[in-house]
Image (cartoon, rainbow, N blue to C red):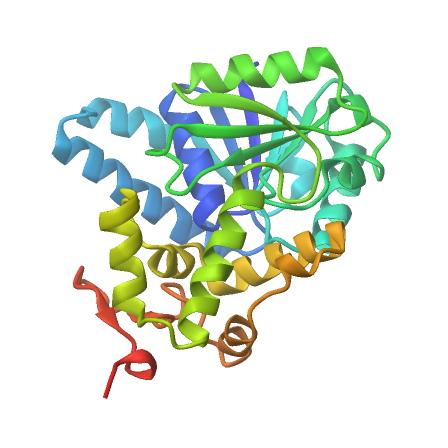
Length: 297
């Protein structure tokens, strides 16, 4: 397995492409938007520069990694020789189902089709293809080149052979794959999102402020990042979408998104990607500044 196609050139897509290319896989990075592809290559180059500066990569390895990536604006062209396709498009079920129909039509018959979805049912995705045994979840963590975990999700029809192949492939990337079954939120987000949601409720109900909530979890529970800062980093819109999947999938009110989260997303305050969430983000600054909305008077 040497030919990898990655659908979507956003944060997760370019991270996945970077990682495969760094380990000498030939990568087709596919996005309908050429400017998004150009930006993705620039991002990958900058991230490789960081690795070179830290001494974890040589200039030659950086050059080889970039040479291993070819960009495409056409799914048909980009996946025609793929052994594995990893979809990393927006967390929208209708979009993902459309993409997988296209992948099933254009990818080689023996190609494995994987989704980087963080919450959407692999079984549902597989059902729109004619190769349900070859459809699987590969949920990478952000930032992909750094984080070791790959949550490998078996759909109802996913074969043992496909699962073993993806587990071994993940290990070849120096990742730690963990096999889980296909239920809403899988493991990572089934546990993480209720915690983030509860942190938002704690703020919403006036129990404590943004800084205080995150400090308790960092210093008291040894979390490297507080839940509100982590929500900003993930994207508040993504957190909301995942909570809706959990709420709809289980029908349990404990997964209902906090009204504050709903309002923030509606107001366009999505976290780091929009420049403001629970904190305010200034380009080039690493200082953690609580948003004016939540500063205590």
